Length: 584
Image (cartoon, rainbow, N blue to C red; front, side):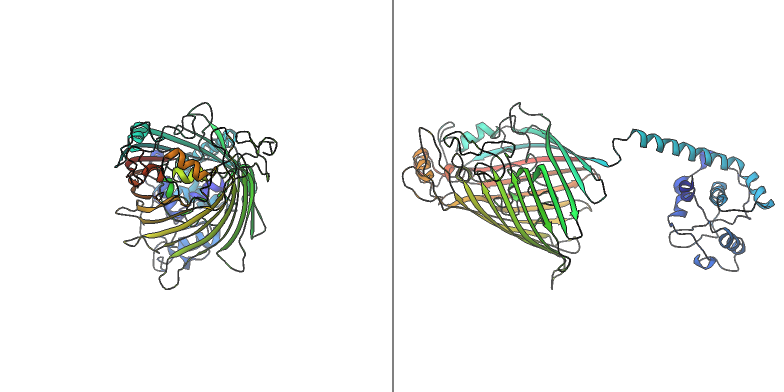
């Protein structure tokens, strides 16, 4: 009762309430509440700056405040003494003062008689509200868990073109003709995430995420260009790709994060990603406000920030020392197949055998990062962030790359490893305007292949295969309309810069034989551009149209034309999409 009464406090002169005709329907609770935003009680008449000793209400207000202390006033500490007051405002004030009054005077009895009906209505509303609150508490899902959901629709289409005239089913699917046949249809896909966030102490987090979608249709490679190509989107990252097809609900996250003192945060989980809370100190990019191409969501270094494959069982920590505010040091380890007891050593000729934690057969990544964020950039102002990351990965593909770089990054039945580096940062202006935020990043990987055992092409272990990548993203917040955003990104997904030895049995030699052309990596580069505009329709709904262009879509394997023998054939993609996001 007392809490609701405080919300109904209204400044008034208790002894100067003129009878005014009113009914229960006239009660404007929102209007009454504006008098009571301030939680502190007024203790002196001087705190009402616009009430003067010459005002008619001065003495009444003075007696009321000093005797009972039950007037709160407006948020700015004033009482509109010259403003008419309704009977409901007067009744609300009287109702608020009743708990404080210790002496029942004749004046008080007269006031209670005068506002008897209004007081009864207020009490009825309070009782009704308390009953509803009790019902909600009795039927709520949990007192410690909150549900946050994200549903995303993507309508998109793509067109492939270029001078590579290879036929649809020749060249292993690396020509515009094949790509148009395989990926050319307009598609409509969705993704749904349900996050259950639980806190037992107010500082910890137990996250459980359920996930469903239809980008992959039960096939990790799929028949959707948005699932696993240079044009893949960030939206379906970590969606279900196993048997059973699309629309399968899975557990996508299950981890626990908690602080140890004021400087250390620890995380462990059976389903945790390398960039989840307590796993990574800084995400060194403020681009984009709404994701489109996945290539621009790795801060320029997909090898170091492998969010596609770096999901599994693992743990990590983030250290944020007080002596240097803004500095973070973090370390994490994730094994994507930790559930398997096969160490990968009993059957080296088996297909992708292996698993566990810290074994040679584990598909794992260990990310070390040092980062720094600042509130004010020297000389130019604005906030900024900078981070260097190193990741040692084994038996794990790059999350996005040209066909050649993707295949090289995890060749062999165990024993494959890579050293991945990333240097990334951002700058964000103090105020939204013509100057955009700038995010940038560079990445590189050095790959040591395993041995691929099969009857057709047994490979030789090779060291020194290298890839490179980079990105720059510009974003204008509050573009044209407050709450909206405009963005543009340009960069290169990981491409082969050195393919290693060309000796018999090496991946390079086998690729050359299969592709009919050189596979040194000299023609493997690519470029990607994206432009988008995010309409923030409501606080919970946004619509983002986007267009994008990718040159050399299949990397070097697409530039090699088996029909003409050319090694510089064009093979490009232009596409567009409409993305709608619902948050609840």
